[in-house]
Length: 408
Image (cartoon, rainbow, N blue to C red; front, side, top):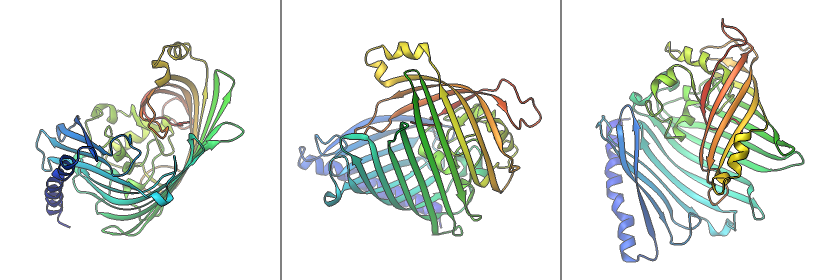
């Protein structure tokens, strides 16, 4: 497939479509509105990526009506080989299967940014329990095309395999309460049905349980399983300490090298939460990456435990009007343990464990469905490792993490 022709074909289509929403708006300003906002980002290939974001909606629906548009277009000011990037999502509810808090919809997504094509269509259905937006089930069935067409954006190209994919996916997300507290079950599955790579199947299962223990103490447990067949490309394989590379594309912080300073990544002090999440082994995994190899496995299972203890600073924050409702500073002890099977490039298949203490600052303004919308930054100290790779089992180690290990 000619990457340049595909790229410039999408750019021309994008330019042709940009004016369409504005025309419909000018004909009837009450039927549809576009809410623009400037946007700036940075990576080591585009430099400052300057652009425009647009939210399109029927006035007064607040992201909960028909014809929902989320659009962005950017220009890399260092003018790399592919300087124009964009993202567009259009969501249309299906009235016959929609109710309050329980919408069914069709979603079209197309993006071309940081050297990665992602285009697809999805059917989404949500079932909400009464008026409690935190208790719901969500099903997504999607078909998508993926292609890594430019490796210059990658800090570690060995985490990606060449060739495009045509994938069919099935995801399910359940969140509710039981006798112990809040819990969640999330499963994501996909099969490659075409493209330049051979067929493969991949799937993950994430179970979480939150157990409150009085006013100031909490216990959280997470179990994770992930498996991919032998033909799976590198971006769909698993590591011990960070989530698969395909999921790095879900955040602007991790899509391209340089947004997070490269030395932080290379030194193994910056963790992208997800997967087995054995946070104490981040340094060992990045030591392997820095040699040009990839610490990847076909299948892995892990348990993550966190026990919160009282934090006077957090209690002071909670007493501040407004700020206390959106900000939290957790302090906790943690223990992670997991093992891998089906070794691909490195690893021993041993049971690996770590333990220590950590702190997490979260700033969160939930969306209209009650889902988290903010940032979570962790500082973890995995002081003990079961397999320290030549150093002491007990040692001061620290990592900075993006995202919660357990998000309940």
